[in-house]
Image (cartoon, rainbow, N blue to C red; front, side):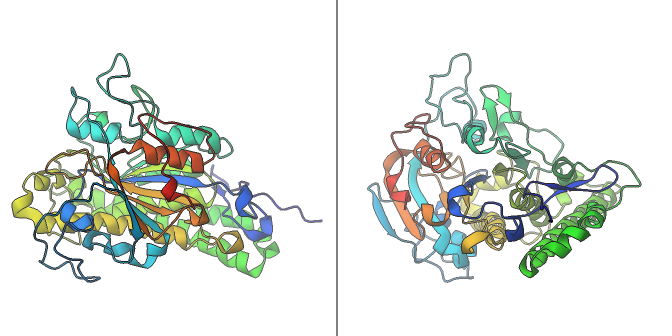
Length: 449
């Protein structure tokens, strides 16, 4: 009688390489919704958004799909009253999500309270997932408590190799700002959950590869041990198995490519740091691929993904947008003259979020579900507008959640609704019995199916 490993079993090659398995029907892991965990991923965008490109009603009209155009004009105002409407049309910045709109919920109207005494950018990032009540945490100028990801991981992360994973797409090493500008995940007040910025370091953390010059590709090592298992799988699982290993190979190839580029750039004299000239989209998507593999193989159920740091004036090369590196923060303070460029950056960030969402939705699970259906993937920022530094009316999109949440909706919550209401709702969806979180006033019942 053949005994199959469960989903979290590991294929182990020589040289210290380990590789977890993806979900496979033949292994009978998580066969139905009642036993499958609802994963949680927080995708954080720095410096807010250009409101007229993101928020419904704040541009003159909705721009047709695929045409950013030059028709952004008057700045509208969000309705301060609650309304629940179909999400039939997407604003210009949200256009990359068009094919996924049946699995989206746009939420507007949520606020956070700024506590005087710290920098507006640092606080909007570091306190985003804690939303602690202002002035209630003693001995610190920060309204910063244990963040949502760690509270959720205490419930759904104990059976995974990593309770949480913290991704940062800040490739720079110049440390221009403090840790509060570049981290959204905290074990508690003053206790940082350090994020990983380097794709190679994240790869090693996930797969425990030995760091030596003779190291072979992890997939080649693990595949040698996997042949017998692969022959025992169903045809569909064999395809999933091969697709999974192909994705690991693609990650290895991309990591090597970026490392060679960084090495080449280091020999060139230039004003900006070497990292300024790394292709931004490739870097973010590579980190996204590592995130997807970690979720797919059950290495974690909870992750934070910071697409960039707050107020970090070292420029980035947005390779599809500009011919030289640009500073997002500096552009945000000159919005009148750089509105078109800022709209391009917002669209660029949304394209990276859409890439991760599409990849998650392409991973098939049991009963016709996808990995996105079993994941709460949230796009958000700690500022409603980067030029005005406003903490109100934050841009929030929830993707996934399957039949546990109401999708293809635009929920415009009453003016002054705390962001913590969303965090409370997500904590409850992930199985936590909580009646309140931070400065919440209650869960968002309209989000629930």
